[in-house]
Amino acid sequence: MMVHALRAHYSAQDFRQRAAQEHLNDAVADYGDHVLNPDMRELFVHDRLRDAAVLIPVVDHGDASTVILTKRAEKLKSHSGQIAFPGGRIDPTDVSPEAAALRETVEEIGITSDYIEIIGRLPDYVTGSGYRIAPVLGIVRPGFRLTVNEGEVDDVFEVPLGFLMDPANHGRASRTWQDQERFFYAMPYEERYIWGVTAGIIRALYERLYT
Image 1 (cartoon, one colour):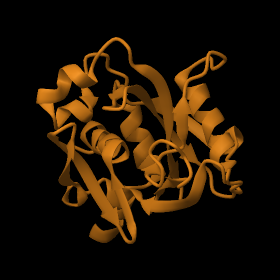
Image 2: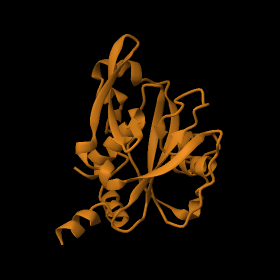
Image 3: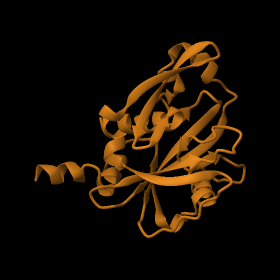
């Protein structure tokens, strides 16, 4: 009984209920790369940020839901080879961050909106690379077919939601950036290295829904 309760803790239904109980897009919330680097706040948080949106796609596998992540193409000019959520810049034609996240998901990995239920949005996440990202929460119905855009994505894989929401897996690491030590979250999973903005958004999701 105890094992079943623990697994149900990471079901898509539980995820939906947690999202419904929160005022997720709270304007006073403060998430971003500057949280672990408070001395760099003025460099990261400013009025010239570019707007973007990502989808946090939780696949409904019963009591053991997973999260879809991508590996960005090695040939991309920026953030090549990094682990990411489906997403990108919000275009002028996008009516909302949710619309942008759905459009980018179709363009990158081919999952169409009829398989995705949007259930909310986290507060914006500010990146050190100059973006203000809207993390959109979605539950994905199994049965979808992937169509990978090889110009943008090298691989698509799933990680158990329970792994990502376990704070024991939320390590911290650092690199030197502009002659300063910059800290970030890192969540190695099997042969994957989830870090930086993606890990920061995962940590924000944990803090918002699972603490």
